[in-house]
Image: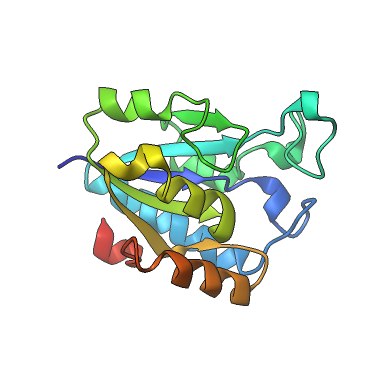
Length: 171
């Protein structure tokens, strides 16, 4: 079985100086970086995913192309400088991207999903129709969203469909 760690939308706009700061970003960033390091030591593929708002839809509140806020967090880029970057414009990281092709080329059979926002891009990717052919889990200690309550509600909502291990258990 070949695993891949999908690191979704750990972008500057979600941090305190950004356009849409989330809850618990420092702890989440630290855990995601640790998960990346563990993945690299364990020969787990690391794939970074970046959300860029579609400019044809008008200016979005955040993640606008060419802005500092839309860039992947520099600590994530430093932790995985060789990782491929999948650019998306929808919550589901598979929609209109080459993610599935990349996973197929690399022989991936298991997905470990983490990142930001728990109730949106993380869960939409993990329960995507395209993700059904993979053994999939959300790394519960490597995700965050607007606040703790919404984070917990989102994890509870998918708990009947997917495992929610910590990164140390899953990688």
